[in-house]
Amino acid sequence: MSAYAEYVTEFDNAEMLIQCLKESGFAEVEYHETAQHLIGYHGDTRQDTAEIIVRRKFVGSASNDIGYKRGEDGKFRAIISEYDSHTYDRDWQTRLADNYCEKKTIKTAQRLGLRFTGKKKVGTKTELKFVKN
Amino acid sequence: MAKTITVTIENGKSTVNLEGFHGKGCAEILAEFAKGNTEVKREKKPEFYQVERKGEACKR
Image (cartoon, rainbow over all chains, first blue to last red; front, side):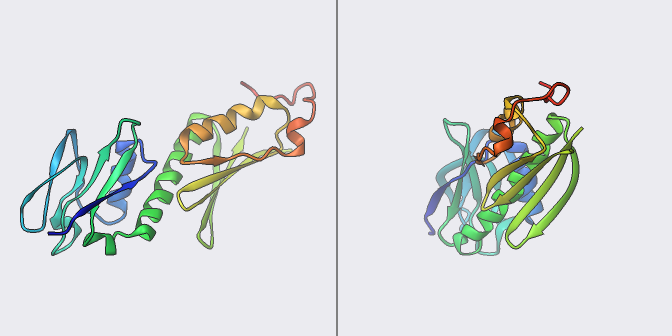
């Protein structure tokens, strides 16, 4: 049985996080108002619970569920098994965080009435440009 | 001069760079991005401290 580990994130918007997870390649992502138990690769119910769950069949052939559990601060903690953390590692989590950050930036800009003028990739950085009319 | 906002994202963190803005009235833009993003680094440019001229103030 592969133990789960928790990773601190800055994700606080469930809808946006689900969208990012889907864009990262997961065909289905579940959302539950009440946290549900994660399932291990043997089909065993784990003690760990999460509101946002990627079921193991969408994660990998010998994988466990991946979960995101909302904390008291409103931010989600990623719950990823030790086995799956080799694939869904820090680099993957960083790419997910970058995508999330990009979506939040665009949403904020829209709220402020800023006009989006372009996106540019510079190495590992993503630049988003806006104009205030 | 056009008022442009460049947001640079790396490692899940963002940096906001404002150009063409003058005065403290524009601080609200930084504040909004700080609310919406993982992390916003703030660096005030000399323009920030310039006195706003009539007609150039940012709308609140």
